[in-house]
Image (cartoon, rainbow, N blue to C red):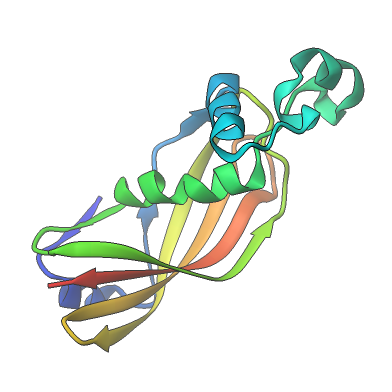
Length: 151
């Protein structure tokens, strides 16, 4: 894990791979809870029996936005800024769900700091995120995600 003292110290890591997270299992319980939280109960996510008959691989799949939302804990396991008053998810410039994430599979994040801009009281960081799906040559998700951190 990369640990820096201040938001400005992240500048030294622009253009570099910050790190890779530990593996995270995406189980059916997590998928069901996300379906309940977002009111997205499409059968491909929650109907295990139907998925066994009709889905490629015979399993339900995680919502793309579930995978995207997991960038928060995955990023937190890759880097930390010690002296920061707050961090804000500023959004994404580009998000692509490039592969299905079957229930029971494992993902991990490869995180690169592409750019950093100084803003009043902190920094705006542009990260290249690639979520690896264990056993697949294709990532599950790629995005450019923007995080702001303040002194």
